[in-house]
Image 1: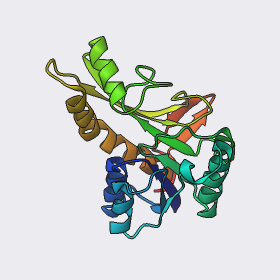
Image 2 (image 1 turned 180 degrees about the vertical axis):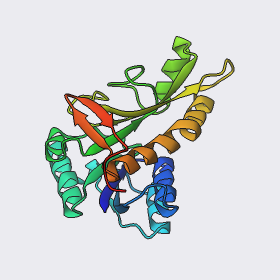
Image 3 (image 1 turned 90 degrees about the vertical axis):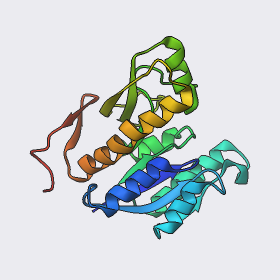
Length: 213
């Protein structure tokens, strides 16, 4: 059984997609051990409560400095003895100590086709604003492992989404969530839980002939 921690910052729509897919069996062999938010009073925590999932808040506001917050976050995650950390709209840079503690065991969902519109400063609605400003005809979402860079880790899965001429950033954001993010994040977790995913020389290989069937 793959035990996962899901880290969130806001409404938790990607978290809900994971919860739903665990419950209906689409994500196999997986248990959500905890949901951790860096913010109080966000709806993602309510989603966890409604599904009887342990939930915690580790907020930078409660610590004297960034180092103390990062140490507390890592300690909290370790306390749940998870196998995989899932960043589902978690708007905090992951500390290097956490990457060292969970090599190729932290995944993130990013709302573009990496390497486009990613890196420092590209998050949330800003990604879609930049995509529309550039005039791209296709955008999408990417699930990748987290390394010590920003959106630079090995890519697990991507899904393209068509951009329409009359799109606004919010409309494009919603379409990418519905047609890509809510599909590929659960799929990536399932692949990892089933042992299909390997990282070789910084490249992800997916082999569905191996693993736990």
